[in-house]
Length: 366
Image 1 (cartoon, rainbow, N blue to C red):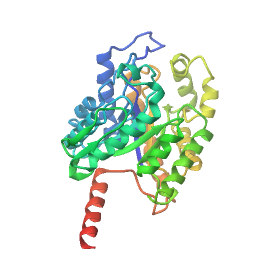
Image 2 (spheres, rainbow, N blue to C red):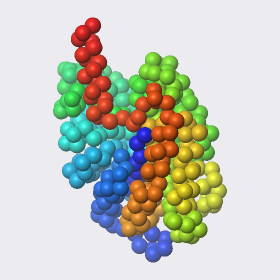
Image 3 (spheres, rainbow, N blue to C red):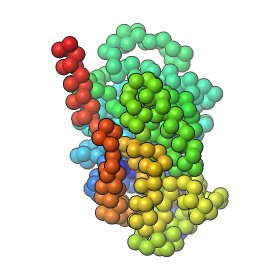
Image 4 (cartoon, rainbow, N blue to C red):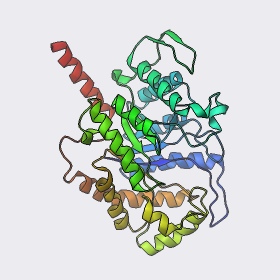
């Protein structure tokens, strides 16, 4: 089981001070959060991709390359790579390059994004979102697995005898998660390829995501990749913790009430009841996170959103200390307890490269 943090890179005013960080401050803060994540023992840092204010991470591979040079074991991922508006050829090149620089500590999460205007900005039609996601990933998948590619599709110019460089490290492409909050077509796509499915369940009730994950697991088995329980599932979550629950609620409430993604809707209490958001003590965070397995089965990756709603960097780093010292050891132990031996752990380059070598040797011997 892998644990980590993800960020969407928003520039949000701190409602308690009225101060808005600069873009430079926010970018540097994201780097500091990634380095702190490794320091406290987390496995993964993931960044979103946005091309509009108030967000700053328009170039995830640039940021992750910088972080790769300053970390040693942290898996570097995206929380969204826009498969609909990025050229699959450029995705193939950029992430293979990053994979080499980071010695394999790279995967990515493909998604369609949540900003409608991004489509025309990059010459695409939002009404073609699902077909774009399906066709573009088919090409990306092929580019990473075939040295010479001939391609013809609806949404880009044809390719003839094209080789994407550099080739994936050790001949093993970065692991791909297909991220979705609402589209069964994306769950089907993840299942078809035997890739991971990341259900970012942070805003809606669990019943919706149980249906999506159930569909993915069922179709994963249908396509012959393993049992439904062996499908690769990732989940989101949000935390704000202090030693005492009352202190956490009192401190976080003004951030919740004024945040663009939270505020002026359900109350903090209503939202924490219906979604994974936990505002309370470390023990409350542990107990709520452990319920995710009851709802969705054994899964491979848990990412938490900590730097949201305008929280200052100092507070986020404090949250990471609490997560690493008081919450993470218990979650690791409890999630490991009773986990069936045939349920895989989170994907790593080393394990996947070893499996590829084993398969190649078996094929050569046959």
